Length: 441
Image (cartoon, rainbow, N blue to C red; front, side):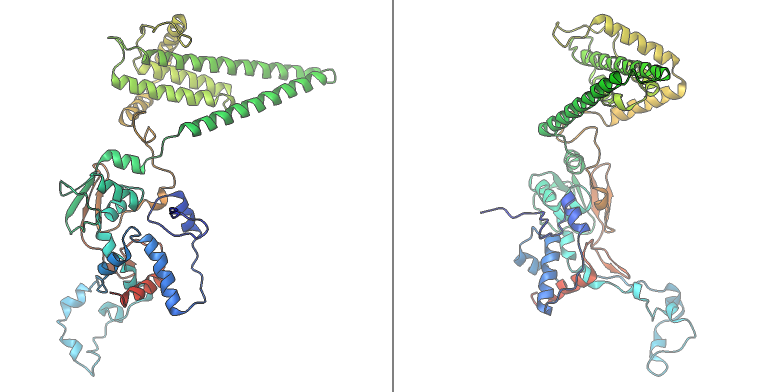
């Protein structure tokens, strides 16, 4: 049996997920008027809304969960309630005593934007489920993933492990998820080996094209050198000097990277600690990014970049006399390593106090958000792409993302102008879906 496509683009359905395909389907959603019977309109609305609200729940189970009694809140005018006790409603000629106040002050007339959207609360019972609450609290990237977290024992309710995704939360219940699972669910994914190989291949192709174009330009310049004026010769010399400087800067950066790798390879008694290794790994990642941007950076910026990197290497307390590993093809020359350390010391002495504070702040951020290749998500941690469109928390939840815990404050209610159940559908679709289930309760 073929597995159904969860994020289809031909017949799109809005899902309770942070996927980029779901965001595309959400952007392409249109409220078109369909020429259909009332029964067909209700069925289409039911199909669309059920694909989002609790698609993991069986239809028969949802029909038992559905209730036509919708919770709502109506704000009262406290000044009016303090002045009158309600007896004025029976006075007059059946419409209440005329007090001379504006209708809005008495709360009799409502504007259209203050209408309570009762039909938007059709799927309010689904919000009580534990897996849905975990997704609403931004602890998972989809309701299915939240269900998986619950089934695998990664969620606790009131301090006790809960393995039932359909557990209905009560007001005041606190649920918490393991932080590693939250970081994995909401963090950017790691690059696979295929992606890395593809990027490396693209870089090689781009470098080959650049070298081919450079050689072609050199050949053309040699052919037209006889026709060129003498004033153009210094420009060619300057270009050659700049190219040579870029090569020197790239060699310096590669030597810095080799020095960092040599220090990490030291596993003796005088080797760096685990915290220092994290800082050196972050430094190596910065150097690799700098090597990749050599061709797009000016020589002045390259000078400043190299000085900053060697100062970072010194601030990371890299040992001066790190014992070199066994001689291999990738071993760093000891004289070159000593030269790099000497450069770093000179750069730190020349660096102003503001730069030192900036580097110290950068190292502190590295310690708080280190690079750890053993994690299943990309490190340093960063939010998953396209997450900003789904990053909101409903009113009935109180979330603390520092400890990955949340409190289910109360059941969602309808208020004037707003329904607290998050939904990407219009009020017309919610009304049709409500009427579909109204006769099937």
